[in-house]
Amino acid sequence: MINDLWYKNAVVYCLSVETFMDSNGDGIGDFQGLQRRLDYISGLGVNAIWLMPFQTSPGRDDGYDVSDYYNVDPRYGTLGDFVEFTHGARQRGIRVLIDLVVNHTSTQHPWFQNARSDPESYYRDWYIWSDKKPANANEGMVFPGVQKTTWTYDEKARQYYFHRFYEFQPDLNTSNPHVQAEILKIMGFWIQLGVSGFRMDAVPFVIAEKGADVKKPREQFAMLRVFREFLQWRLGDSIILAEANVVPKENLAYFGDDGDRMQMMFNFHVNQALFYALASGDARPLAKAIVNTSDRPETGQWGMFLRNHDELDLGRLTEKQRQKVFSEFGPDKNMQLYDRGIRRRLAPMLENDRRRLELAYSLLFSLPGTPVLRYGDEIGMGDDLSLPERNCARTPMQWSAEPHGGFTKNDKPVLPVISGGLFGFEHINVAEQRRDPNSMLNWTERLIRMRKEAPEIGWGACTVLNTGDTGVLALRYDWRDNSVLIVHNLNSKPVEVTFVVGIGEHGDLLIDIADGGNSEADANGRHRLLLDAYAYRWFRVGGLDYLLRRKEV
Ligand code: NOJ
Image (cartoon, rainbow, N blue to C red; front, top):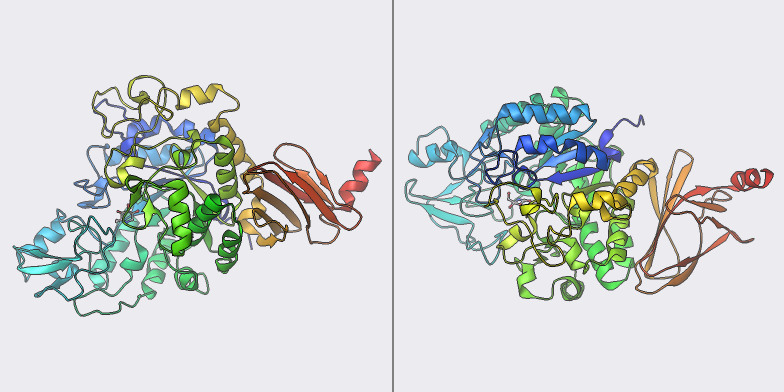
């Protein structure tokens, strides 16, 4: 296959315009501020930005409650600023993906306002209504503990409306062909303004059958093909990255057996196993998760991530595994959320232990997929647990030691910048880390460069090697007669492992591409590696030819 499917080997950087950089001093991040920071993002080496929702919204779910799909929220700038931004990104070789939130709108959206005011309204059937409160109204809430029901009575409509998420997010009736046509129109609009695709919010709910009498909603997978066909017709190399936290056996239905549905999906299965591995030091469930999700069409790709803007969802681990992760990374009730997850950022979870942070990011970058970083990860930002729900991990970017971390000149930033303590902007900021060659920032830049130089990971077949140690994960990737091997020690103590690379004489020499320190196989073709606690090693796999050439010199 021609290797110009850019998303197979990209590094994605996710950010929220609102909390990235404020250019006009009103305390709220904006597109002009982001524009000024494009060179910073480009310097990191990432080649795609995923923007969280920035369309007009009452902002009750951080923009995931849209009231106008065809506009930039005035707090962040104008459509003109947006196009300047996508243009600036393109000039730097960076693609832009944006959130596409079409499972639901805001209650403030004119469609909903129209729908509720008149049963005859054209928009009435754009939402899901019921005269009576359905018997299952108290099931299936996405935000248990905060969200009380999935059906709420609307006085004006004199009916109940369905909402999978908060009550101010009425579900769109996505089976309605007019709604589907509108979704395509929204995609077409933003594609025209310079984006390369969408992170599609809540995909399993978008395609689920909805209605008061639906007992077991079936997924309407054909819809995914319609979205993809439209997009590719408008812009050949545009993609959809699906947010779909589903069990592995359903993955192929989302990618499409022939690769005719979603190009990318977030790998929630591996994400949860990865956190269990970090918490327990046992790499086996992670290895299993990698194998269980290895089946995907050639053009499909995983989005791999550590923490995102939501809680770390541990809902698919076993009870015992989940308790292990809670006890290691989120023991206090205040650190947990929605009965299933942890709301902290990664650095505080790992007690700011640089060895463990490097291990975690090195693991992320070596997984079979495209790594997705979150703004602030590259400098090891912390969280503010005094903020409600997921806001604790959505605080403004820390640029410098100036007031409010250089994020804004206003005294009232949209969310407080983390100040004081281990993670305060006074210590953790871009300006300081830029000057220090050993900073997290500069280390992350080097990691990104190394990842981009190993296309085998994005394109190749992944094999888990047997190292004989349950805490050591060794992954080999083969692609076009090239191979890389990446070894991680999840143990908190040094270990010695032996293994065979397993591709004949190619594998007799492992060339260290991170720090130097090659490994030569013994007469039986076995490698012996001494690994420090939490060590990670990246090797290019060489063969006899390498050894001979070296001896000639
Ligand atoms: C998933 C998003 O990641 C989350 O932040 C949001 O609250 C829900 N979808 C609803 O849109």
